[in-house]
Image 1 (tube, rainbow, N blue to C red):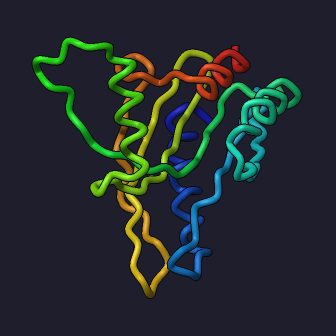
Image 2 (cartoon, rainbow, N blue to C red):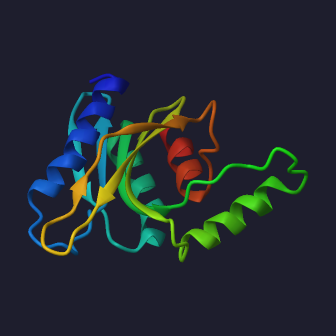
Length: 165
């Protein structure tokens, strides 16, 4: 399975999860799709506590000989644009925007599919639509970016990328 086939498989898998949902308040479980050098795939539901993901995933990558990984998780996001005249610290600005997204009136629930291999990581995002009387619905997938054009970094991303090398 090549990188693009894995991306399509992971996105289809995330969409299939909503077919099993019955209640309006159900959440997408987090999954890891682990592909080793032999082409064997393991799909693992991750614990709700994201703090457990790094040791769990890096151990599985090492033990199973994983060379490609897909990660599905949900999050809240707020779209914003960097002001043209911005001259401050970009990291500080991004942290403040992340803090505001937790309670922002215009926040959007999304499912994120991140696809990793030894050289890159790409992100795909789909909006979640909820109603009071039906299970959530997953929108269309849009490319979020990749490691060459976006800021895909942080403890989880960096740890996975290092373990895959």
